[in-house]
Image (cartoon, rainbow, N blue to C red):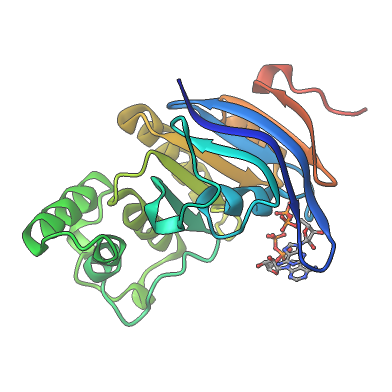
Length: 226
Ligand code: ADP
Ligand code: ADP
């Protein structure tokens, strides 16, 4: 059974831009997939269709065997992380992570317990009461990760999450992502324009260009033009 399937998926924006053209991909549970390609090739659009933030123009989008084309984002078992973290600066770490659960209307006690668990897992317990505005880029990205994981998604979607970090931090968050993949067994879909990131992280790389998928291959078989 596949976790995620895109079959003949197209996206044409209202202004006529053909952003994604005949995208086909079957993703197994627990796989780490990277969408790799230059700016404007359709990576983010594809990710936003999977999350439900953008509509699918035509084709089938299936999550765990269920067609989700018309399902609202909050009903999908997906969670999204953005490059700019999108944290609330006036709230502390715990409140930011709790926010991920508030849309789910989970009882307070249970929500607090889940927040504590994920803060512990990501090494954030000691800064739980600090406002996020006082924290470093690496810490903020870890908080964004905690907020996405606390809802226990089947599929974690990451849109250039390492772009704003320096080289050392990028390396350490990369390692953390690989550990989480092993530990949690959830599916990762990771958008990047950096080949080195795709090579370091993914089980398979989806190379995109001008809205189309050019190749899908494991890192060691990646074909690059001379
Ligand atoms: P990225 O390449 O990381 O997707 P962009 O700078 O291309 O980022 O886009 C940033 C935002 O602007 C996105 O929300 C995207 O949907 C929107 N956007 C990009 N191109 C257009 C366009 N031609 N018309 C309208 N909105 C656009
Ligand atoms: P990438 O993530 O690979 O940088 P995008 O998915 O952001 O690419 O963009 C794919 C194409 O769709 C680009 O030509 C971009 O300008 C266009 N685009 C993105 N968002 C919008 C939007 N909201 N409205 C119109 N065109 C858009």
